[in-house]
Length: 154
Image (tube, rainbow, N blue to C red):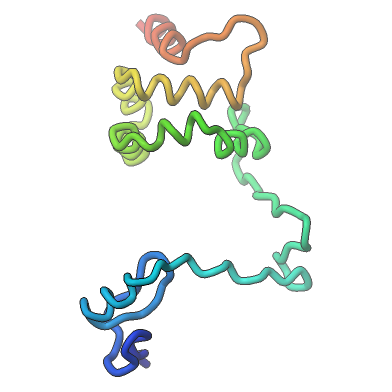
């Protein structure tokens, strides 16, 4: 079952606005839609009475299936999302590209080693570590740790 364009209501829709998910059929309708700012649709309300629903004022906890000694608690991970410094660093397309390459790499450890050659990546990693694992005494830089680990392996 196909739906009609939400702008002209004549033709069958072919496209969807990335921001507000509005259906449209052509460039003409798209341009008409762009004359006014659009916003993302509000998230559907969660029903606390349904299984998996969250009552108002409560946060849903994510279950970690395979935790290790290196697993970072969710409360500390939330600090990453609140860091203005990290947000500013992530505006840099070069850093985003490096993070994507590390994420998509078959050999993650090698990809991190290569990325650690970039001062911008080192700054990002240092800031992440500073937030989730604050230093008690003297702060160690992540690149120093990687260098030390590489020396021990030889």
